[in-house]
Image (cartoon, rainbow, N blue to C red; front, side):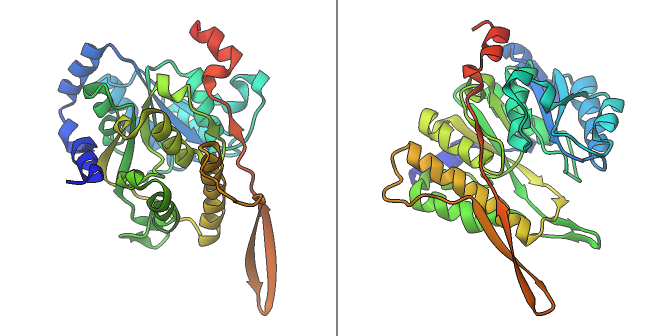
Length: 324
């Protein structure tokens, strides 16, 4: 058995292994760990209410596995925060957390500031646009951390059918993973190809790991995390859980191009930090795409800069709060 196959065999789980939540609750009490659930949002009023209702009723009221549920918002212009608060979530505008650090708009900013705002020893991140939300999206990720002390970072994987206005397409999700990230990992970090969905937005992480990670605020946050955890703690720090299926909204190809551009910036930046950049030329921050209007072809330029937040443990306000 190869090293990758051995890791997959030992560190890959299925959510059904943890369906007995009474047993899971006993294990949580045995470890003494606390768990926070963070849902990062930006204009998610359509789906956020259902997520809060289901996760709160099952994971806080029926089986108190989760100690707090918080929505960290980038500045929604719809009723995301009002809806989330009405259904019982703690709600925060990211700009109000550590205001002395300023505010940057991006999902990574919300995830980074959640480390300071939330109290849990484990923080579980779940995206807000899941159309088939189920408690397994949380307990399936948290459980390996409760049972396996050596695992610190658990990623979700699943089938990813896409939701269109006409219905559900059975497959097609994970396109950036398959045409960009997996080939890059295969070229430079073959062990990491054992991660089935490296870009999944759902993962659970121990605080002592999260507070030591830099956080790109844009598209590259998941890729950077994987590379940083791999470098610092090795492959054994990872686990992954099969959550069966995640239905989410479709993203246009041009949007996936922007995502890929940001991920590439983060990936190449990490290679430079690891001394693997070789003779790469200076990178540019402009992504050029095309849109056609009859026979007129217009080049559209997007400036995409993967800004990065330093590890939370280096922030004075956080160190003071945690008593470091």
